[in-house]
Image (cartoon, rainbow, N blue to C red; front, side, top):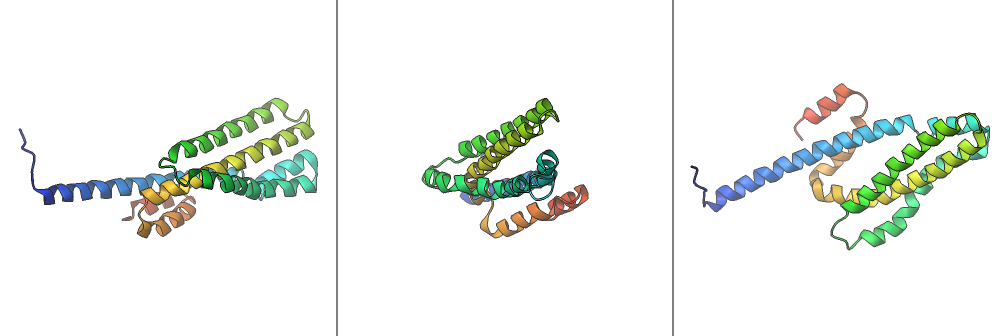
Length: 185
């Protein structure tokens, strides 16, 4: 039977080690999450892939331009309301989960509408895609504010610059991800 130590320095040292392990785990998981998000964005890039998809359906330059603009506008407008709503709330994770769930549901709706409508009615497919895409980008705006708050609480200030730069650069290849994450954080 092991007797618990009553030495407060030992307890403080143990708590510091646990906190450091938790910080390292949060850092690695968040970098991986960001890496996979960036990879998924490459498949639905709002400056190349989606405009080409809309142009293929409609041959409309206006709708091609609208597709790129929806990303910026949809991402930004919900933050005007969400930031004020969340500012004084102690828990932000439910709002992040709501935004991410809405994004996932909307991607599923986009996939289903593409499969069900297909090439039978290009105008209807383009209209449904643009509507769903606006909902999707708006959900990104909803989840961005709580996400940034969660990151600010879980990643130490002196590590945030490295965190964001790794999220951007580590998505190139799997080997690059491993080497970025295996370096001492």
